[in-house]
Amino acid sequence: MDFQRLSGDLQSLLTRNHKLTLAVGLLCASHVIALVVILNLLGAVRTVVVPPEIHKTFWVSGNHASPEYLEQMASFIAWLVLDVSPGSIDWKKDTLLGYVAPEQHGPFKSRQELESDRLKRINASTTFAPQQLQVNDSAQSVIVRGRLRTFVNGLETSTELKAYLVEFNHAGARLHLKTFKEISYANK
Image 1 (cartoon, rainbow, N blue to C red):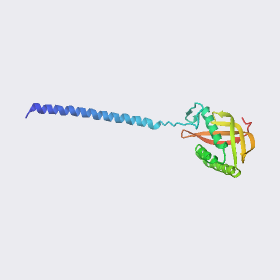
Image 2 (image 1 turned 90 degrees about the vertical axis):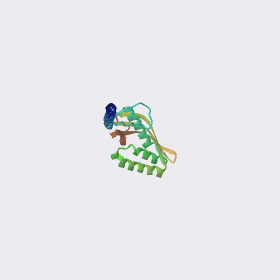
Image 3 (image 1 turned 180 degrees about the horizontal axis):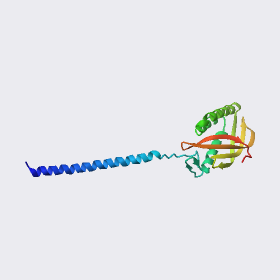
């Protein structure tokens, strides 16, 4: 027996064993670090919300949106509801329903379908020109004032100053339309 050779082989095996132990330890540590990172990311959900057109900078934090965001969304909602013709009301109705709060979906859908049938039956269209947006930051609502023009068979039948209350609520880090109703123009 060559004791020297066996001793060298034993030393080589021990060195290799230490290296493998170190490699396994590093792999275990990297798995623990990856697990910690994944667990930290699970609670942090970032939802990016963008209005259809961006004219001003804005922010959304928790259950509160900036006045600029409310203005932009209220203008967009008013355009979807009030600036319609027999050819555009169906796709605008479908787009609007994507922004409506789930508990208000049925009433909004019924109202928009009735309006669609009425516009198609009398061949009418309406255009709305917003003139003033009054934001209530604490209530997350906007009063939109402007001129509503109505046309029947291409002839203008009325031009009126109108005001509409647009209320929003937050659900799932998203702004939803809660109310859209006509109010008195002089209403503060």
